[in-house]
Length: 132
Image (cartoon, rainbow, N blue to C red):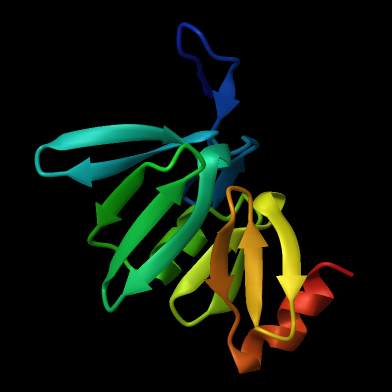
């Protein structure tokens, strides 16, 4: 088991696959986003929602910070599979931990900080089922 630890953080674990042998390791609580030649490090638990525009995504954090990436929404959903992301629309995925209200009349989800995210007609049943 490979342990990864920073100075001010509890140990985090990664999954490593080598020649069909798996080492038992949990996922890391942080992730990086490349911006030019710089990698920026963020905490996964701070993601409020992710929005997509074609092959680009914007990750919005709880503190209001926005990070523009050249990756698709599907890429981020697969990479951040250990946090509870819920696809609400073709272009939106929200962190279920920050949902405060679901409005079926207006087809919107309210997140902390009075942020509203649309819910598509095709995803409405799935969204309602996810919270029951």
